[in-house]
Length: 381
Image 1 (cartoon, rainbow, N blue to C red):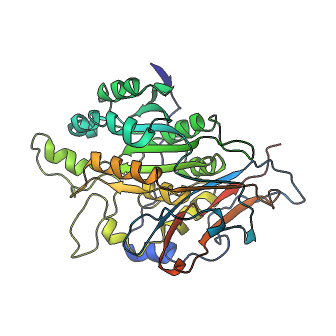
Image 2 (image 1 turned 90 degrees about the horizontal axis):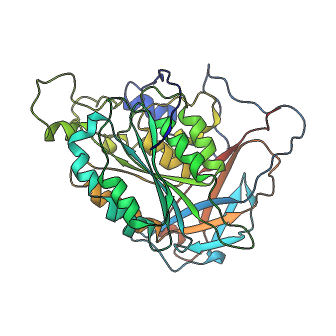
Image 3 (image 1 turned 45 degrees about the horizontal axis):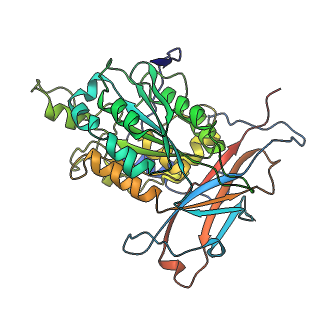
């Protein structure tokens, strides 16, 4: 087993006290780069023109109709892409065909040990539904350490065996350090160029929506994910569900997973409170986090990471099992569009806002999901 270990330090979580505060801070997304929050330093580009090497920018695009059914009959001429308001020329277009490079990031802390039997059965879903016949995958487990359990392989049996033999570790989980390791692994995989197709880079995380002790911050990880054209998908594990399946214990605290926002008065507790955060603009939250050095997070980091990269985050409480969530993600990955372009203002450091629209008679009835942008930092030195 090859270990990827990062020196630990205690991450500071800034949790929003109530949903009203979250809506105030994150609910309105301006058309351009978000203004800095008072009292929080923003990374500034040095004065003068700075050349920054940017290859192609790739964004996954999911298009659904008014019933939520994915739309598969669009081609490149139906899409318009702007980068910081400037129209871009689409140089690579694909519908679910480019092979995947997938890093499966699995929490192996003792906190989710009761869920391990269900997780160990998901290997065949990853290989058949997500990877597909042309994909490759790697497996990384994490608790208070980050361990590369299996490097990239196209061998389905190897991936299935690795997942089937996952074992529980300590009670901590360094989610952000694990995400950073996964993004670094994916950044070396070939991606599309003008001359030939590449691999879509996907980070699929099975974890609680909480970090404990990582050296990396979410902002740092998301900046690298965006520059590396990595799409993040999350399958949220519930410690509440795990506790329900384990031996009965005396009641302690609120019963909510660590890092979960407390519900407002009169609202029942759920592991993710997805229904209660309907007024929070996750895209605005993701853009704000990526632009700021410290990458401080209030709320669900899996949802923010997915919003920042064009992916999706699915909870596994109530009527959605872990298997069903993985199956839904696999179905989306093989039914979404991939658009690539070389930005015309690649020398401009700072946050680049991406907007994708569909040009068609029924466009107003379509729901489009794509990554909101990427952060271009000035070169070091």
